[in-house]
Length: 78
Image 1 (cartoon, rainbow, N blue to C red):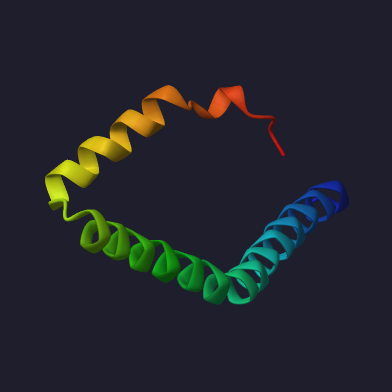
Image 2: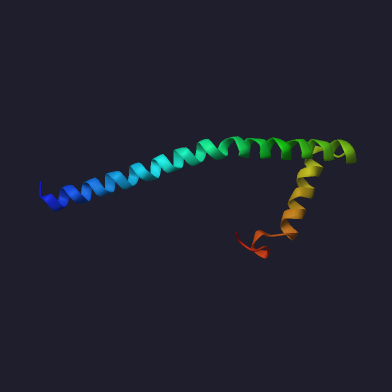
């Protein structure tokens, strides 16, 4: 194998290794926070259903309406 091919192959392998390690580290750091946020949103949904005495279908309908009138493209992208 030529020297240039070995360099190219090693560059590709090291780049993918770097990306996979970064993704694993990011997942390890952020997954717990995401679970906490998800649980908080689920608790909020349950609280609204109890407070306003609405069914799951009514809540989903309300959620669709709110999302329809507040599309993501309206807000600035981070």
